[in-house]
Each structure stands twice: as structure tokens, then as C-alpha cells.
Amino acid sequence: MVYYGINNRPKILELIGCYNYLNKQQTSIIPDRLKRIYQTASNYFKTQTGYMNTLKKGITNNDKASKLIEVYNKMDLSTKWHFKNDSEFSECYEKLRETASDFGI
Image (tube, rainbow, N blue to C red; front, side):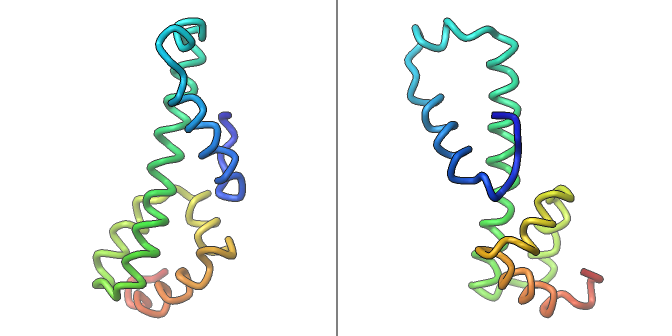
């Protein structure tokens, strides 16, 4: 569950959903260390994919380039790579690059 990758997005979202559906009795069985690992991975994944979705929506809505660059700069290197190369987002990356050429992307 710690492996991060946008290509694994459906699997990770399913994993997060399954964990969130556990009741308190079921989660009490899981050791605290593993809960922390899950929570860290979950928060990280949700944050990074949130940035990608925000950029996709912003590019579609023709938001200001400075606002889009601000979101782009919050992304980690792995997420930037996936945003550029993932088939779902690569078109958005090209539009962002064209729109924000003055910002050095």
C-alpha cells in the first residue's frame, strides 16, 4: 500500500476505500505502526492526485497561468513526471506548458 504511482491510481483508491470502510473493531486489530503507514501513504496520495485533478480542472477552465503554476510547483517530482507522461493528463500538461511558457516549465 505504500507504493505510490499514478499508474496504480485505481488500485490505491480501492485500497483507501476498503480501509475507510473498516469499522472500529476491525481497525483496532491493525497495529498502530501499520495504521500510521497507511495514513501517511493515503494522505500523500490524495494530496498529489488532488494537485493533478486541480490542474486538469484549472486548465479546462482556462484559469490564470500563475494560479496553475502555483499548484504545479506544489507537486513532487514523481507526480510532475506522471502528470507529463500519463495518458489521462499528458494533454493537460502540454496545455499548461504552452500557457505558462513564461514561467519556465
